[in-house]
Image 1 (cartoon, one colour):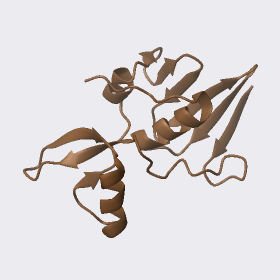
Image 2 (image 1 turned 120 degrees about the vertical axis):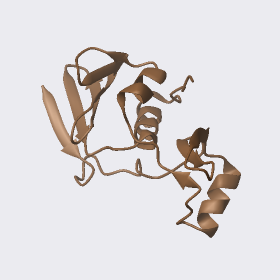
Image 3 (image 1 turned 180 degrees about the horizontal axis):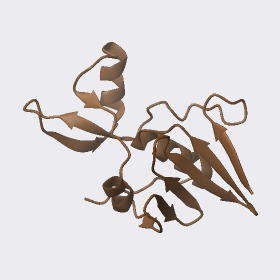
Length: 130
């Protein structure tokens, strides 16, 4: 059985949209290019001082990012890592297998949302490999 929910429902409402220490993000290099970094305490302090800082940008979910986190592609849109999955599409669903059910959480765009949910469910960080 697949149980759908979205961030606006009481069942699935969470702080998973929030940035936390260890989240991946894009760092602007000032010349139109960027590198991928992890949020640290100094970054959090900078964002608190200037929440509209153009230096930091959320990293969007895509196939290449999921593969670098170790997800395996099982269909053209579904990627699996253990009992945790991502369905790429218009809403980018996160899929979590619980007993004989799959919880499908929609409306996800960014890597930090995936990292936060994965950490909340598994108790461990996703590891990004370059």
